[in-house]
Structures are given as C-alpha cells and as structure tokens.
Amino acid sequence: MPETTQQLYFSYCDIMQKAADVNYASAVLGWDQETYMPPKGADARGRQLSTLAGQAHEILTSDKLEQLLKELSTRGDLNDIGKNNVRLSREDFEKNKKLTPAFVEELTKQTSECFNAWIEARKKNDFSVFAPSLSKMVALKRKQAEMYGYKVHPYDALADDYEKGITVAVLDPVFAGIREQLPPILDKIKAAVQVDDTFFYRHFPKGQQWEFSLDVLKSMGFDFEAGRQDYSEHPFTTSFAPSDVRLTTRVDENNYASMLWSCIHEGGHGLYEQGLPEDQYGLPLGSAASLGIHESQSRIWENCIGRGLDFWKFFYPKLQARFPEQLTDVTAEAFFKASNKVEPSLIRTEADELTYHFHVMIRYEIEKQLIEGSLDVKDLPAKWNELYRQYLGITPPDDKSGVLQDVHWSHGSFGYFPTYTLGSFYAAQFYAQAQKDIPNLLKQVSNGELAELLQWLWEKVHRHGRRFTSEELCERITGQKLDPSFFIRYIQDKYMGIYGI
Ligand code: CO
Image 1 (cartoon, rainbow, N blue to C red):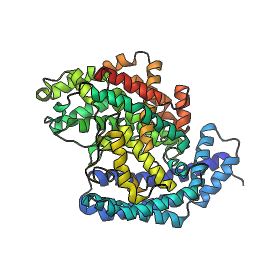
Image 2 (image 1 turned 60 degrees about the vertical axis):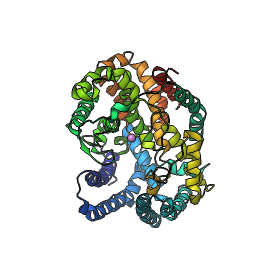
Image 3 (image 1 turned 90 degrees about the vertical axis):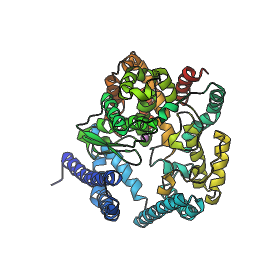
Image 4 (image 1 turned 60 degrees about the horizontal axis):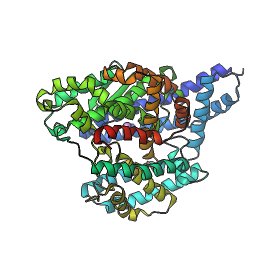
C-alpha cells in the first residue's frame, strides 16, 4: 500500500529527530568537557564523542533518508512548514554527499592532528611547529572546495558552510567598506581626549560578579528554568533543545570587563536558542539561520544594548550597589565611556567594537588568499604582521599574540571569521529597524524594560529557524539588503558622544 504524505513526513521527522538526539547527547558531553570533566576523563570522552559523531553521520547519510527526501520533494500536498524542512534537508543531504567517506575521515584525522600541532606551537610560541600541519589542512580545504563546487571563487564553497549563500562577491564590498571608512574614524578617536577605563581593573570579587550577571541575564529575559550558566575557560553557548540552553562564562577578579561583556554576549546567543520553535526539534526550521545571524543576536545585546548609555541608566545604580567600594568614584557616564574605549590591540577577542573589524578583515584577506593559492602558509606570519602594522599600527611581538592566537584554522574552519563582522553589521541594521518599530525603545531600555525588544527579535528572527537565509531575513526585517552604512552610522553616533568626534 503506498504511503500517505503524512506517513512519509512522519518517517522523515523520526530520522531527523533521532540524529538530533545523538547530536545533542554529544553536545551535553561537549559542554561537560569544557565545564566539569576532570582532566583524566579526556581519553574516554574523546572516544564517546567520536562514536556518537559516527552514529549521527550514519543516520543523516542513510539511503532511507535519501529516498524519503526524494519522494517527499515530489509530494504537492505537504504543508508549508513541511516543504521548507524537506527542501533544506535535501540541500544539506546533497551537499554532504559531495564529500566521500574517505575524504571525511582524512579531514577528521587532519583536524585533530592540526589542533594538537596548534596547541604545541602555542606552547612553544613558534609558528613553524604549526606550519606543516596547517599546510596539509589548507590543501584539504582546497580539495573540499573543489568537491563542493563553486561558480566564482573556491572560498565561496567553504564560507557557505557557515553562512549559506555568502560569497566573496558579497564579502569583498563589506570589507572594502571597513578598509575605507573605519581608518578616518579611528584617526579622529586617536587624536581625541582618551577615555579612562582603569577602574575596570580594580578588585571585583567573583561571587558578586556572578550574582550581577544573573540579574542582567534575567532582565534580558533568559529563562533559567530552560537553561543555566556555568564557568568555563572560554565562554560559549550550547543548546540541547530550546528548553535546555547552556551559557558559560569566565571571571577575572582583576578585570571586570572580561566577564560582563561576554556574559551579555552569550546571553544574546542563549535567547536565540531559547526562542527557536520547540515543535521543530531536530528539523531545519528548529535550528538557527546561520552563524552570522546567531552573532547578530549576541552583538545586538552586548554592543547595541549592553554598551549603551540607556542600559546603564537603569543598571548602573544596581551595579554600584553590588560594588560600592570599587565604583564609588565612578559615574554612570564614565562607566559607559570606559565600556566603549577604543584602542588598537593585538588580540581579536579583546578588541573594541571598532578595531575588531580590522582583525576580522585581516583574517578574511589571508584565508581567501590561502584558499585561492596566492599565499603560502610559510609566508603567513610575515603577511599577518604586515597587515597588523598597516591597519592597527602595531606589530605582534611573537607568534602567540599574532598568527597563533585563534583556534579556527586548526579546526579547518576557513570562511568562519567573516560571520563575526556580518553579525555586527546585521546587529546594527536590525537595531536601527527595532528603534523604528518600537518608537520608545530607548526609554524602555533606560527603565530596564527589555521584554518588548526580545519579543521583536523573536518575532523577526528567532521563531523562523532556518526558514530564511541571512540575506533573506535581512531584507524581510529591514526592507533592504545588508548595508554596511548602518554599522558606520551606529559607531559614529556612539563615538560622537564619547570622543566628541
Ligand atoms: Co558569539
């Protein structure tokens, strides 16, 4: 008896959700690895994760799934949600199939070798320890781009893994905007009276930092019945379902800025995960649109809201009450200014909102050249240092604070970096739209009322899952394509109030 569309769709959902069960079980183990696992647990954890990854891969590449997707694509009586899920799953399936099992295995092996080489190289502070592994990785990624196929640039094929549909043709103008428009702003800031942020480095006890972070996350609308926060060495967000989202943070008692911003940032990621439709568990419409959109959610909260004066009108008295000694001589205005201090520096993850994008642009230019074959790995440190001199006016004293600072390339993640800049640019464009759609938004923020903004983000972004690409979402929300001028205007406004430029 031929099966009805509904029966077929049910079988498809069942397969996808079983794969999700396995993947989220891996995510629990991965979260534990970064938070509570004792050091001796590493070997056993490694094999557990690898077994689960194999199982998920098997489910997601099965003939049964392929046949179901093929058959369901021909059925006209699927509803709209079903059609979108099937369309996206089919695209994923076809893309995965382009890589042979032998290639995937080789890539997995090379990734772990390359990551270990990176750790070793960082320990020795010596890029040459990393170079041979990285060369092999670049060769594999170039091969992967050929296997995926591309129309114009091999980088397009790889970047698509992180930001569907993104290409060099879209990214080049974005980074050209940064190259041309940010240096004059930076020059004006450098010539202005500088901001004092030394009070951030007073002693802020761990427990009070933690308590305040929970207050802020609650005010943002993070649901602690459907998530929690823990400590880890590097802050991250992971999710096992919209009803179980994990944030992590780190605390430096002698640098309060370190935790505060990363906490609001991860909170923004967490709100996106909690806002995904629960009834689409394991299906494309139940997952985030792209890394760039994910990052837009963290940055709208961290930068547009959290580093804004209106936010601190409400929160600063509460912060001062928690840290009466440390902040007694610091006004809300001084705190706001310090939170937005601009200063060229060596490390991307510690950079301010403006110079951050030079760090990303430098990585983008370098990885594009590595993938197209116009730059050799052995010339990477020289190129890196040259670009840092050119755009940030500083030269890394060693490899660790230069070319070895990020883990991404050791993971084979070429095409990932631009999603950080896209995130900031989408955030600025969405934020401008939110202020139009919610006319008294800033007033609400200054009263600590953040619910309407969260509702707006849910309505415009969260609830759609992967239904729209980032470009489509941007057009739907703002009526136009990604336009870097929103970001430029946003930072000009901000720094006018701080540096008087
Ligand atoms: Co982030």
